[in-house]
Image (cartoon, rainbow, N blue to C red; front, side, top):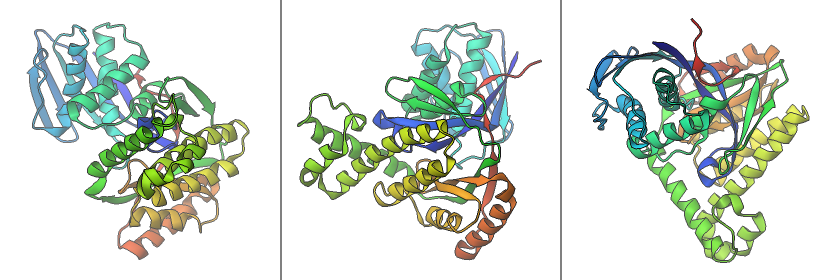
Amino acid sequence: MVIVRSPGRINLIGEHTDYNEGFVLPSAIDRAIYLAVGPRRGSDVSLTSLDLNDQIQFNVREAAKSKKAWANYLIGVVHQLNEAGYRIGGFNCVFSGDIPIGAGMSSSAGVEAGLAFALNSIFDLGIGRRDLAKIAQRSENEFVGVRCGIMDQFANLLSKGESALHLDCRSLQFEHIPFTRKDLEFVLCDTGVKHSLASSEYNLRREQCETGAGIIRKYFTGVRSLRDVEPEMLREHKGELGDMIYGRCEYVVEENARVNLAGKYLRQNDYDKFGELLYASHEGLRDRYQVSCRELDILVDAATKIDGVLGARMMGGGFGGCTLNLVERDSAEEFKSKIRKSYERDTGKIPQLYECSLMPGTDLVPD
C-alpha cells in the first residue's frame, strides 16, 4: 500500500489561457488530498471517500460512469489507463483532504492526479509525471465531461516548493521560478457563492475564443489558437470579430503577455510590478472576458483599500469562488480582519479565508 499526498493549487496569473494554448503561472499549495491505495486480489475496485462517508465498487475492466459525481473523477482515471493499454489489477482506495470544494483550488485534479500517481506506483506502470498529468486531464475532459485545460493536473504533479510554475500549455515546456519574498504570502478570500452560470459560460468562452481564432486564421497563416495572435491582428479585424468576440480575444492575448511579464518580474524580484499585474488581470476578466461577479469585484475593490496588499484578482473559472491576494505577512491579520468586515457589510456574508504556501507537487508520503 502507498499513501499519496496530492495538493491543491493556486494560479498566480493566467486565467482562461490554458485552453487557448497559452501561458499560466500556477503552483501547488499546502492543502491536499491524501489517498491510501493498495492492490487487492481479483479485479474489483473499492473507492471510499471519508469526507463524504460514501463508497463505490466496480470491476477494474468495466470502468463505467457512476451516478455518484465524486466517484467519476477517480473512475475516469481507471478508464483512461485501460484505454491507453495499461494493465492494472483490483485495488482499494480510501481518501480524504482539506482542499475546500468549490473554492477554485482544484480538488478535482487532486483526486485525479493523486490516484493516477498511486496506481503508477503500486502497479509499476512506468509513466512519467507529464504523461500522468495528461491522463488525469483526459479523465476530466472525456469521462467527467469538463473541458478543462492541462494547468491543474500539470501544476499538481510538477510543482516545486517555494516557486511558481511558468508553463507553456502548448509545448508543456516549463520553468520553476523561485518565489523569494518570505515576507509575502497569498491569501484566498472565498466569496461563498458559485453562480449557476459558471459551467455553461465556461464552455461558451471556449467557443467564443475558438470562433475568434478561426476568423483571424483566415488572414494570417500559422494561427492555430489565440496563443498565436498579436494585438494588431485583432484590431485589424475588429469589425468582423464584433465587440463581444473581440473583447474575449483581446483579454486572452493581453493575459498571455501578463503571464510572461509576471515571470520576468518574479525573476527580477520586482513584486510591486508583479502585484500590479494581478489587478490588471482582474480588470480584464471583469470587463473584457466578463466572468467576474459582484461578490468577486467587492473583494478585489476592498483589497485595493487595505495597506500591505500588493495585488488582488479573481482566480479560477469565475462567477464565484475565490480572490487571490498578495499580502505582506506582517499585514496579513489586519488584512483578514478588514476584508471580512468589508465583505460582510456589502453582502451580509462572512468569507472563508485561506493562507497558502507554495509547495511541491504530488508525491508519496514517507513511511
